[in-house]
Length: 128
Image (cartoon, rainbow, N blue to C red; front, side, top):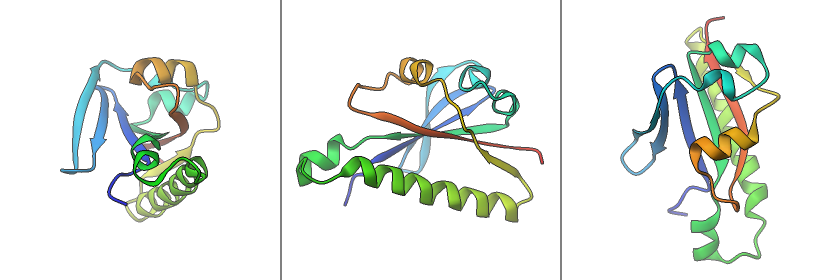
C-alpha cells in the first residue's frame, strides 16, 4: 500500500535505531544502552538485539480512510514478521524469543511515540 503500518525499532548496546524502509537503513534515535529498561524479563536486558514493533496506521488511514480495522492488521503483520524472525534466527543458529512483557510507558517515552500509535511487542535476539 506504499506505507507500512508497523514501524520497527532496533535496540542494542550502542543505542536505539529506527528502521527506514525507504532505503533499508537504520537511523540512530538515541545513544546508550536501554535494553534492561524495556522489559521485566531478564533475557531482554542482555539480548544482542531487540526489535520493537509499533503500530503506525496514520499514513494508511490518511490514504484509505479510518473505517478499516488497521490496528488489527498491524498486529497480524507483526505476527508474520516475528514468525519470519524465528525462522531466520533458527537457520542462523541465533536465539530468538518473543518477550511476554514490555514497559509500554518507557517505550513510548524513549521512542517519542504519539498517542495514536501502539507498541505491539518486543522480540529479542541473542545466544542460544
